[in-house]
Image (cartoon, rainbow, N blue to C red; front, side):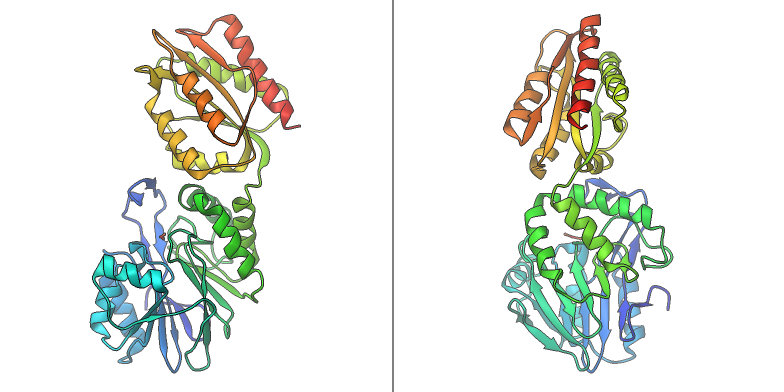
Length: 394
Ligand code: FEO
């Protein structure tokens, strides 16, 4: 049946592809959609791992019924209760009243709060095992790898790690679901966009989770979004490891906003200074590119240069939003450069300086602030900033 893909002999992908939602979490653009991955292990006992988001439930239930041919679900494991993975819990519970829901203490609390569900819940402890017949599954409680209740489930028999959000990414799976079936370069990019926008705040806890899964013998990484890794499961673990260690590459991201072209002239002068030193640079105009596409490069490159006009005595609003997102992510090991302009009252550059002082940033001089239109001296200083920041990377 369409949308049922064997992962191992007894394990199937039951996920759904969301091509319709424009935004994930009502914030992050989904130009290529997203998948909500659910899995089922059919053994002497039947276990489902995570479910799908509302809007996809009828097709999802059809797939389960088609596979089970009259059998029931014995266990529903909730690795993560955020509704993109748990919206079908209530209806599954109604359809299979004997089904036990498996989670930890925090999962049980959320079940009550989200769905008013308190019955048939089996609360597991860290490392607890459950036999399904030939398959033995083990639960790893890995809190705050998005939410407090997050955990992973490891099938010791088939060596599948059902990892929840971690090791996942944006992008729907219209064809194959495996790393050897898809355009992996595209999905690696979408995984970094997902990580840098959604999960990066929890990097310390992701590191803790990775240290636990490194000891496992893994044939498949089966996350809750995106590609299932079978050819090279280490690939996605290594990427998440690198990202959550704040490991950076030499390069500069220059992010600016400009209302009338004056701040843009400054940005171009800075880029010229960087180019003289032959350092990689990515330039983004905040008014043209959504920050979700900028954050991956901010996460990736060691140096960040921010510039914008003052708007009503404060930061330009789109820059204010970017700053708030960056602060929330607690980015480490970065250099920062600052520039800006104003017409009748300043504010943007001082706000950017305050941001640099508050965070874990090494400020590279000079800071440049132009009044109305940049002077020759302002533009020369911009080139100097570009050269200085580039030289720090060499
Ligand atoms: Fe895919 Fe944290 O939900």
